[in-house]
Length: 570
Image 1: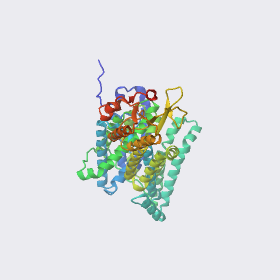
Image 2: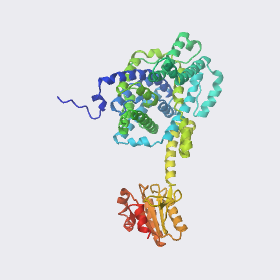
Image 3: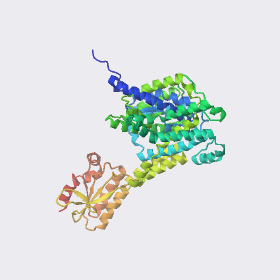
Image 4: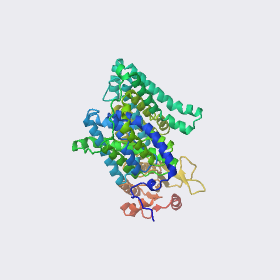
């Protein structure tokens, strides 16, 4: 009997699953769940939502991605940057925590999910390359700074707010005299413990005989240890009633009810741009993490499949009362290190989270908000990427400028304005670089068929012949610059009779550049200077040959620079 094939839209790992993979998936699922619980609660608070929504966003979205995504180890769910973007988008529209705010957050997940699914069906996976690494690094670093400062009020136990970072800092300074000392002690102690565990706990565990891999995984569970320890402390000493320590309070027990809140036209008009940015940033972040982990196992990530998987995850979040989700860096690394072999690890994590929500949410009542804030601060400060800024500054100041400007834009202008500024800068830098192409006059390396820059190498030239190589495609932004360079060369050497344009690096010639070349050929001909091309690529030739310029140049295009030199040197 032949084995029945699964539907084509389901991943291959289900039909190819083997029993020997189960132990790794079980272990990873358990460890990620322990890590996910405090993060889900903390990130929901960061988004301005009730803590249970973070838990809701950690069940069905994980299962949906496991069935439709392409990564074997990516751990989806609430993440810090997307939570911040959600809060930033919704704060001007409704009061955080209100019914309207919650409804808008769910609708945001729905709109984001639909967008990602449409992008996947249209095979727009190349969108992962729209944001350069410096822009992503600057955006995440700026978001981490913004998040950290925004959480200081919970560590201090004061009520402070502001429309921007300056206003927030000023309001924090104004409320410093009202600092709750018990809350401050809990928050700073939790921060110090998390910092110590990140830098020293793994080494300590290795010294007592635990393997480096297990020690690394256990050190990642420090947030859960902090949550359990300080929750018990608040309960045992009644710190909430005696000293006014703010706690999570009642977290509804039981599974979320399934439903769909469809946005109206006003909601769509207000949410489509934030949802688009959340989708784009979440997709780029997820693909980056998934690809880096897949390379270690020689696995393959399919960007179009990732769009569908993340779109399904966000739709599942909207249906189950959650908010926008994506793949998380820290959880994915832990999932990978814990031995996850397939997305079954994520499904196991979702099932365990279901048990927690169904029976154990009452244990979160005394969880101090300062500990959740410390968990967030500890997680996001690790994302501030000073190393990339230093490397970019040393290698390419334009990229460093993009990174720094994006980071400062997020900090001082907000997440949406910051990411749009970063995208605009990336495109501006690309156009700026292309508008200033490197151009080199070539000569022959003696006794070879190689031709190199006369300013870098000892080469031989041919009297009356100038060979110019343009190291960029020709288009509207650089056409005038190339024309000016060629005319300057013609004016400098009055003996020039032949001008050879070497197109080995030219991948495209747009209409503006074509018109420039047409006029250039006529202008040079009027001065008894013949224009020639060499090493023109096939796709360009296909388009060029039917143009008036191409017809005039029919016998003046050479296969190689060497052939051109041999022909024209006489």
